[in-house]
Structures are given as C-alpha cells and as structure tokens.
Amino acid sequence: MRPTRRRVLLAQLLFARGHRHVTAEMLFNEAIEAHIEVALATVYNTLSQFTQAGLLHRVMPNRSRSCFDTDTRIHPHFYLVGEDTLIDIPEKRLFEQMPEALPGYEISRLDIIVQIRRTRPDI
Image (tube, rainbow, N blue to C red; front, side, top):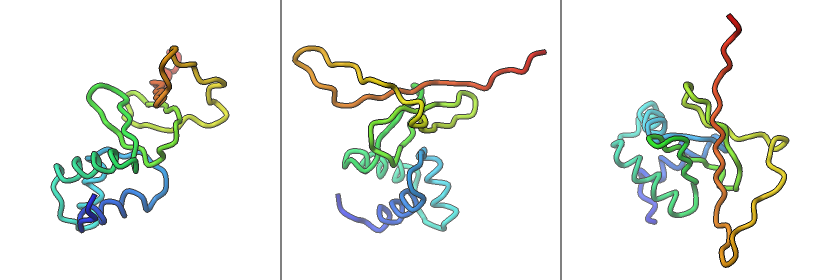
C-alpha cells in the first residue's frame, strides 16, 4: 500500500487515540473537523485497504453497519442497540474456552458480538 498524503492523514486521525471503534462516517467527520479535504468514498476505501493490510478489523454489529476496530486481537464486543455503539467486552467477562474447530479445519477468527439494550425502568 502506497503511503499517500490522505492515507497518512487518515491513519494519524485513526490511530492517534489508541484503541477504538470507528465508522467511515465518524472518521470522515473527524477529517472535516481537522480541515482534511477528503471524500467519504476515499475514507471507505482507505478503511478497507487498512483492513486488508491487517491494521484494522472490520466488525459488523448488524447487517447494515460496519465498524472498524484498531485493536486487531481476537476479542468479543458488546453492541449497544439503539445507541449504535460498539465496545469491547471487559476481560473479566471473557469466555472461558474457545470452541474447537471441526476435524480438518482450524479457527481463523472468532467474532462474538453480544447485542444489548438498556433496560426499561419499571412503570
């Protein structure tokens, strides 16, 4: 991947804050606020290229939403329904055992997204 000016600027925005989850729209808005002239399509393409290069992991909490995780380790997520927020499940709540693959197969990736929503107060 060629380090173009826009890719470098987007990478700085993306990785300067440590591990986080972003959407293309979030990164696009951050670029606009930082006075970086970039098209939304360029942001989508850059996120896809970073994912293919192993710099990001794409997490799809539902069929219409893609989030990009700067933490590429295998780890589960909570998706806060109605708040459109993806967060890492704290390590103390991690699952105790990884499932075994079928004979003749190996696990290449484990993606667990637990969808949660706020409880309604008793009426």
